[in-house]
Image 1: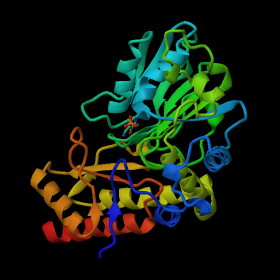
Image 2: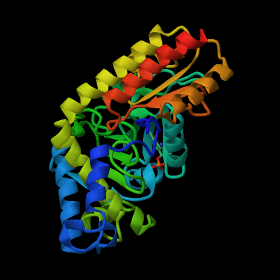
Image 3: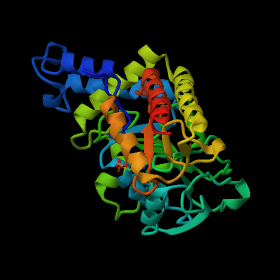
Length: 363
Ligand code: PMP
């Protein structure tokens, strides 16, 4: 069978070694005679998985001790509400930067809970750049500033995190967490749906600074209060146990097979450079994003002549070669190659070679 490379934006490819390890352990986890899916979330074996997962992500991301790591549910979309509910407790004002469809949703949801101001916007029909945000744009009284560090649909990324002074940054890192080292102390709260660089869907990772929790008003549902989950070490109720186990395997893979986030960064940069170079040299296709804001994770590209038929042929012929899920998001059109951590260099090379071969055939 042809090797399949899955360019899906999420849920997306997982490292093959991780899937194999999960398969080995599936029906009999550590000689327990049970699968991880069947373990009580209060059992010793499962507690060990939780502890290991937390220790590993702390090590990988060098998370300072004054931050809590929470394994939650509800996806990043629930964080669009949970963050304002918990954090709009001072001036009840927050500043948002809209750089794509997901940050637009976060902005809209937050309106329900306070006085939400827009301080930056990637204007235009195709959001092709990241606005520069400076400290003087930020309301010093705001409870936080919200950004989306990587825009999964638009393919843009904050290569530099804005300086917001003393106002904490809340960051949706769903599509670039763990792709490179990040200085966690630059953020008040980081959240990410797991289904790109962490593991299977169903798990939402939250990293939150201690002083920002414990202030939620009484009306906030118990399940949406960070404090409860922090106190109960993410087992207030049944956590997404299997997804947490898979995340632990991904974290182990990142540390032991890849060699940590500095090495991951190098690999991601190499993959992205190869793909962008190939598209730049192509006479048929072009990228949709300004060079300095290009994402290393999501690479949208379109026909230079807006030839929809050619794009459809590309996607069809790519699929025949084992290059899967390259259709672009409906709002951008064309193609999108998501090349998260688990996408090997060979997969991107195969795509680059396919783009070149396609061009010879169809020019
Ligand atoms: N934020 C970003 C940047 C995303 O890419 C996504 C999903 N692709 C979401 C939020 C929504 O995540 P979820 O489906 O986990 O709610």
